[in-house]
Length: 361
Image (cartoon, rainbow, N blue to C red; front, side, top):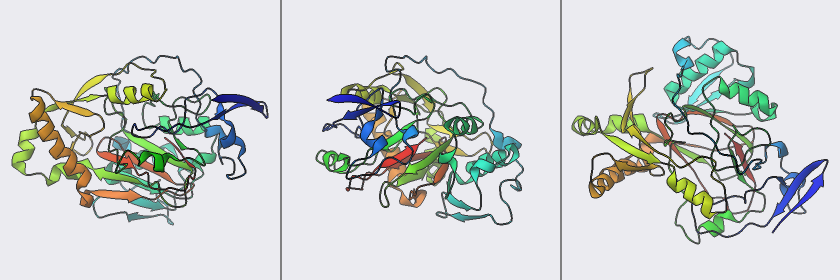
């Protein structure tokens, strides 16, 4: 049952969540108004810290055109390799692991100049996952945050999810306060790992991506990243040669079907896109695997059993090799900048106390 009520001149909605045995779990019922309890609070939970970032479906019947290939400029090509504008005297970098990721201290992202942003793109190419703490990014006017991220490339309109009112370019990851998502989900599943590269089914999947925490549980809800470049390097030269020239089909059909089954909307027709299994970074010349279990479905030219056999090996190689991975623990004010072109990632559904998790991408 859904009801609306005006508060401070805005319209909010009250909704009752329903159980689902579909995965990954649906975190809210699609609606055209902000969740009333999330925006105003309840006896048990405080109001959301950033209610203007709560997701709504303003135009549920809208249809987005298929994406077309565009000329893309990676600002990393323009960057000073010494990073003088990005890192000041008080800045320092600490690797998350010897292989993947780094935490950067003494940098306030909102204050970066264009030259510093170019150097951020270069550092992201190198480390692939960057973590910045105590950032004011979430406090910027949403339009400023959108314009900031647009500097690094085309912004995506997500086909199936809600967005902050007036800003469809932002994808919201949202588990409302008091949710029972985890216990309900684990009635049907043994784990919550959903490894993927964002929108790998698009003709030009996203590159540098910003994730910023608005409000997160004190514990739990981490994100794990895997290095697809190192995964390729670990393969024998003979196996690498076997993969050269192979292509695989990535699809959004399963994602669309889950959205419809959960009562959601699909604003862009499902698509199938063919990508090379091995891609080359034009900046570094390094190769990486480009497959993931969420969206990759078929090796072109292989019979089903052959394709399944090869893809299962590659999936396991990427997702089970913890020595190719790093794990990011979220705090309010954390911003993660990662390269979606040569990594995979998965959120972790492991907090059982119903705390709110609210992240923008």
